[in-house]
Image 1 (tube, rainbow, N blue to C red):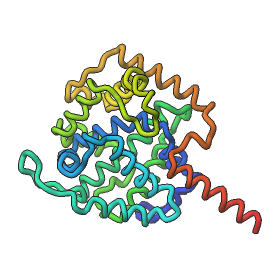
Image 2 (image 1 turned 120 degrees about the vertical axis):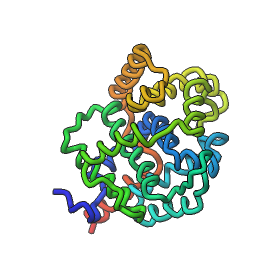
Image 3 (image 1 turned 180 degrees about the vertical axis):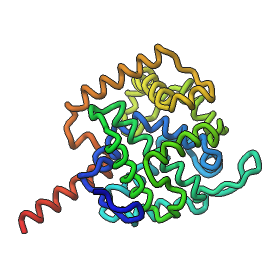
Image 4 (image 1 turned 30 degrees about the vertical axis):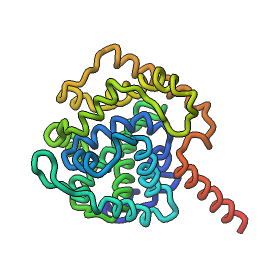
Length: 286
């Protein structure tokens, strides 16, 4: 039984969000997530004017994503959430059309979070062997609401159910998102630029990044977008692309079971798992 909508809930190892949000496979849905964020007028303008994303994309991702994951996995996720919220306080201004924006405007902040819900769902649907029921999706949504609550921002804009969230999602895709300059640049990078300088990889892997990783990033970035977004903005995507993406997804699903559990999670999530194990051992010893 889930607690009432407005009450806190546990996001421990028994939750779907804990199981999947810190999974390294989220990287396969992350590029599409980033494009969807940049298509929001306020988010796109904020990133273009207040971020080094297009000159230092991997550095920005490494700075931002661990903190966002910490809202779920840290011992005091609410403190981490408030810290993430406060990072955004000075991000405001006027976009190229003269529209005022602020990263902390409720609708803007909610959309950024909604894309992470989308990313986790897509990870499960495309890259994991688990087949989810409507009840699973409803529970995952409620867990993502708790994730959002920990930022200590207004909850009035948050859909009250998974069905309402899906309707709001479609509305944003059809009526709110735009091909902002920031989104257009991200799409251009995904379609035409070569991957280099991935963090943690040695210099000699550059040819592999350029010729092997680049096609994968293109497939997951463009193929990971909702079909209605590809149609609306006339993004190139054909039957061969779709077949290649399905093949890659199947390969990940079948091979992931051979990856040792300690290697499946990012650092913040791995630390959360270790903390839970240590707490359980201490409880047994006591």
